[in-house]
Image 1 (tube, rainbow, N blue to C red):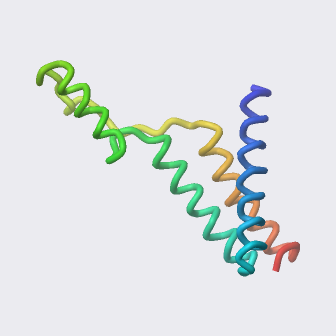
Image 2: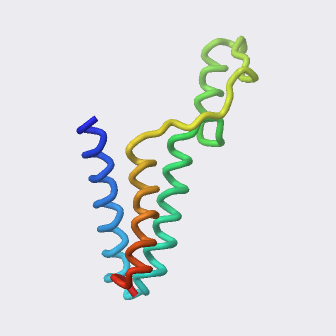
Length: 106
């Protein structure tokens, strides 16, 4: 459990660092950069942690070719795996709101 929390916090720190860096390097508004960047990170994490999407179709085709056509993908269901990347990205979006509404970033 400690390792999981450490990985979530590491993802959070890396994502916040990337967003602050992008804001400083490109001289953009920190509020907009943090909000849209956090949403982009959450979207990316959802795609990476889900099955049954367009990214996993290539692996289904590979299994189909390997089994010479005897693979039946109709029994697969879409699912989401809760991993540190997804939790850290959602936490990054959640951190944005207190920082903005408390006036820490403006």
